[in-house]
Length: 199
Image (cartoon, rainbow, N blue to C red; front, side):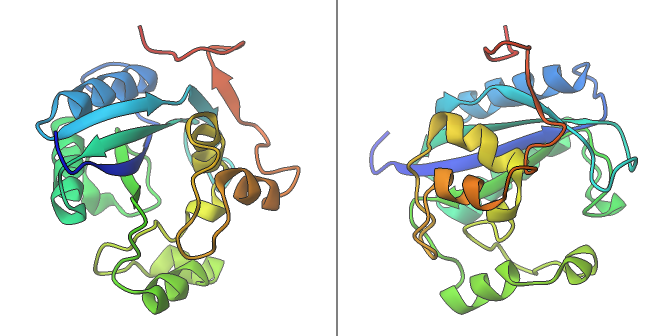
């Protein structure tokens, strides 16, 4: 592939799918993603078990992050991710905070800021209450919540700790440290002791 862009994709699931348990869904989704035309996975984090938020709202999640190389633009890449979700039975009508069989989030693509810095900053600064009721009507890059999510930053720190947010200039390690000592509370890499939980 020529003219490759560097992308970051976060994977998550907390309901079993036809593929099996949530960890198997993530492993199978990564295999499908890597096999897609014009997409190649360059690195994959361990799978982490992460408590649902708010506490008690559902089963624990399995989360991971993949670094990819792709010739696709952001819109085409997002379409591919949604297509893979659909293959696993993802129902996007159940709401942004609902349990799901598979969630593939496009976190970043190169240093793109989409659609513009002001819009990205608006969604980054959105209060917690508004986050639950408001959703952008277009692709926002980098993902406006990535800097707030330990379940994205901890796996990402395993494979790209030096990646820098194109708007804030902070690298992954700095964003993770800024979350504070309780950011990874309840999170556990699988299997215990290390190693990707995919065969």
